[in-house]
Length: 273
Image (cartoon, rainbow, N blue to C red; front, top):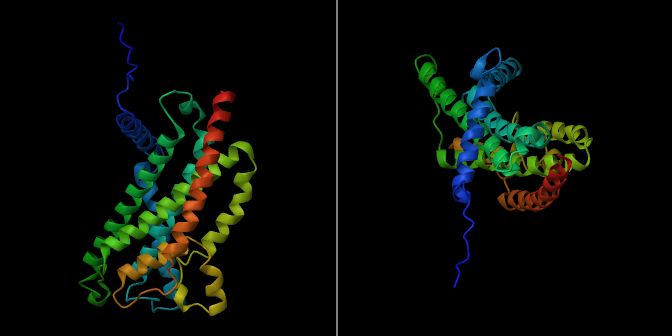
């Protein structure tokens, strides 16, 4: 009586294959990031320069920060959360078309690339957050000790950053998949991206806005993790505008549609290659 042959994958279990693919792609991203004129440090400079630049500009307009006693820490919490979303979404949105050569390898899937972009952005943003926070408090304590602030609830800050990254992840998958069928979608979505930038709340406190403006801003899902991060950071502030139910419902709907589109987009890319 014969025994059925087992078709064991030469790459090991699916979990091991996913781990090895992400590790290789992460190393590739690091190597590509280091090729610029500023090297690997270049990916850290833009958010840091934005935090410092906006802090100085806002200080010239009004020396009193909207929350707390440090203008830079106010922008730190808004900018890091925003960039975690923005970079993840932008990198994943472009990944399906810019990585066609890599996707030709049968062991590499689009999800491997998406996960790598997400992990890379989280790593960079969390590094920026901690380096800036510790450096700011260390150097400022001798001159302006009243501006030294530590997070009220660092775990909730992490959760807010993770929320923004996951939202960028699912929206990036949706955009990347849709762009396979409609190449002009990337340019069309840039209008939505600008609107999210303006109404994200990273440069102002949503609860302090006029009621009419606040009612518009709360429809932007990105606003909720930004306000949550500030609520977690400042002991004297707890945003009344944060609605986690709305945020996760919106993100779940985008994820369902996005991953359904991704399956069809993967088939089209396979057929074209």
